[in-house]
Length: 174
Image (cartoon, rainbow, N blue to C red):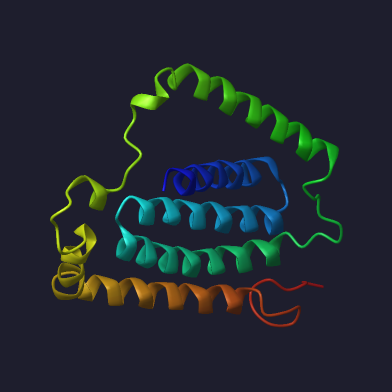
């Protein structure tokens, strides 16, 4: 379990570095999805499986809208990739800063608790996040439906804005 959590933390840091170091929206969106997946994997490791699933699905819906919008507005014929020198320079700077900050804060790293919630109390029959499922669908059900409706509406608005050259708000004016 410790190795799983360590890999998830390294993947989260690498995903966030991919977002911060790349100016192209295509690769930055891929890094953002990777960071979201690793962050939800960390939540699963610490006992929040249902919450991480709901957050990941909602986050991917929002990312779809943002990615379509940025890809339509910043369409580059040759986007900068992760292998370009300018991007590698930023990755090196971010990696060194993460190492220095980690070295400063992780003096006694072996004293930290790396086990999940279920391993601490051995007699629990129900996971900790399943108690929130009933509250999500009873008290928060209307907010869940409203959030889904807003994401669907935002998707249609972005698709209408970026429909083509002769349609929508983004067209060539002669």
